[in-house]
Image (cartoon, rainbow, N blue to C red; front, side, top):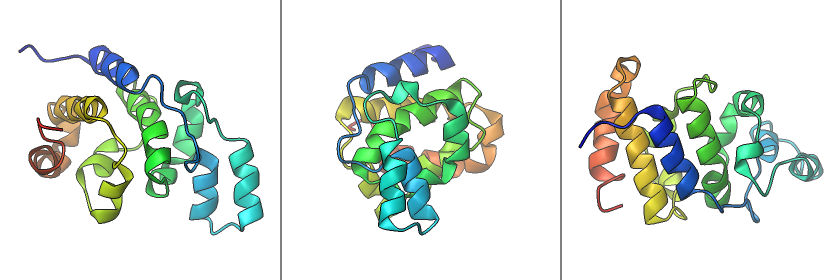
Length: 156
């Protein structure tokens, strides 16, 4: 099978996550509030301004400013925001390393992926296989390979 390029991976991710909304999940700025130990009222005001219906409308600048939100999403928040982060990374706009979020797994991070469908998991696997070919991720290659073999498997 020929290798996929970044646009093909992005299209796969867009299709897999096309109808996902935030629902009751933790929003992007709301997660920043949690990271900053903000009170409940402050987090609620952040959430009021969060995108809830179309992850593709989240500006890349917001993703870069709220990179630590990835550590504070619940499963609904992760399912909603993950495609925005991945596509921004594929397009070169997201400046953080997404391999850490997807390959350095623990019980908490695995729980964040609990709501992903098999199609969504396959899109994540395709992303990981794509970055595995990129030498700029060489440091993370052992972790990516382990995650592909143990969590993001072909049976995903």
